[in-house]
Image 1 (cartoon, rainbow, N blue to C red):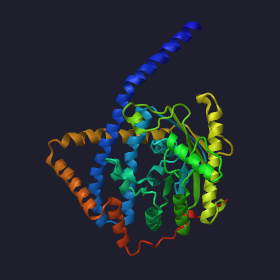
Image 2 (cartoon, rainbow, N blue to C red; image 1 turned 180 degrees about the vertical axis):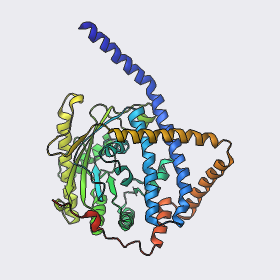
Image 3 (cartoon, one colour; image 1 turned 180 degrees about the horizontal axis):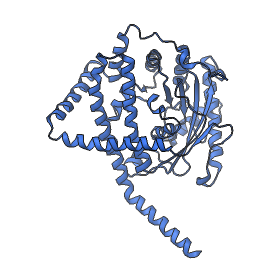
Image 4 (cartoon, rainbow, N blue to C red; image 1 turned 135 degrees about the horizontal axis):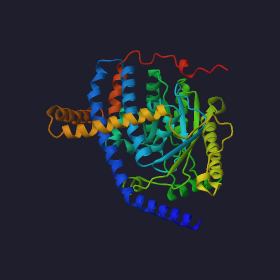
Length: 408
């Protein structure tokens, strides 16, 4: 027995040393892979952009969303197979056929990376219909930022005078397309750090609220505006309350993740479906409801972390629809083949870029297109929506088809 414990201890130490040595290699490989594949994706997107002149806008939107969804296989595969991050999801099923809002606590700056594997495992079509609300600065992230703009993510400046009209136009755009998008947002507006925790506690003391241990108090204005606009357009079926937790180690930022290769071993998600009938109608009531929901979320996380053994930490399993621990064989096959396609195409593209004149011309074309968009439109999503506005029939769609009640 003593010998077995000694062998296990040596193996564990050896594994930790190997992880420490290879971690930066994997982290840098991840960053380079994301950078290269996203720029190749920009290249493809710029080639596809002229289609906006010749095909129906809804078909263009479908094509673009599926192309960007295809790129997310790179991200998911790198996280799962290269960095060995395990994702566990339990709770209610998110309906990909109906428009909704997904809200989640923002524990680290990297939370949004892991949701793709979780949602893909629940329903692969969610990676096509998901739209994320992020802070304004992330649109400038090299490569990936352009793709997020093409996908029409919502970028918040945290000024309702500017964010409000952006929300209204985006929801009008989504509604007119007749497609059920799921809009994912972090109501807290920032990740949990010592500084933001201090600000949240100060806010709680000022307003007579209890302090939160695992969350930050949400900024309610953005959610209220988004929810009310979607409800006004009859373009919302439910709100999904999603909670993220890290049972082992918490990796707070990109520097640890990308340069040192330090990653969370496991990421756990919990999903709770909330019918819109249970949400107040007025702005003040919605704001209060969201604040109380976050207090309940903090209590949920407190119960989660109360378990001293990281390997046994789980979210409550009362009245849940399912638990998703691993991909089905079909999901694995699609993900693996897609990843291999990207791994083959990108090196070939980089190689041919050094001598093949057609590839070089198209690369220069991509740069010219980006400059043209910046000069005349500012952003590529503004360009895309400008063509949508020219369509005289863009507002004609019966949204009742999207949010019709399920037959009991």
